[in-house]
Image (tube, rainbow, N blue to C red; front, side, top):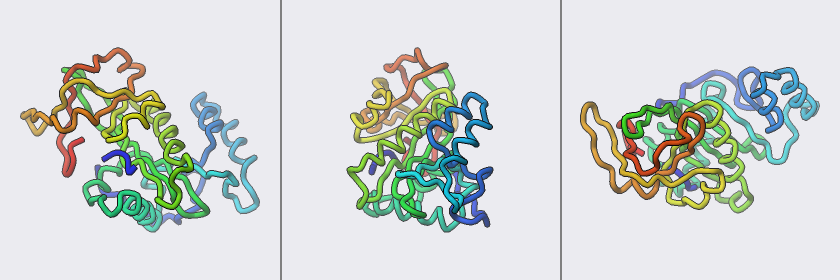
Length: 236
């Protein structure tokens, strides 16, 4: 499920927000670039310089990149409410399960999440070649906060996460033009889902599939067959 645009989120006893720096990546883009260069001390200095006396980042907007295990149950419930609002209560339990198990990019308004994107690991095959794929799910903004660029903000960070941790990106959407600006490309070949030893054609998904090609996947053929593993709810 894409624009409104797994596993169960593991309950934890950690406080909601703000959490400890070691548990939650609450970093500016500059700090993330420092970490990418293994310059952790520079990243820490960047974050420290932006913190007020309360120990939270004084940024507008406040963007956080988190894992589910770093979130309290209460905060995950707030994210679910955001998604229910953005999808007009058409966000099924299976859709929620599909957002878990990877990273979440969150924009906060105070302590409340107002925009969200999830990047979860999936194994996709292009022809016979296997790729560790960052699959983007549930890109959404609270209805009262839409048209402020927050969806683009979380998608920019989600795209960076895919490039940093995976071999390819993929997503399913009805709004191709939105994602093209971040370098995503419409898939042109047939799509399938693998259920055990059986390959099942998914023609209704073809027009909404997009991929992010880079590194190991830079030269893949967009017209080749693409296959995902079966899961509950929407396969793609």
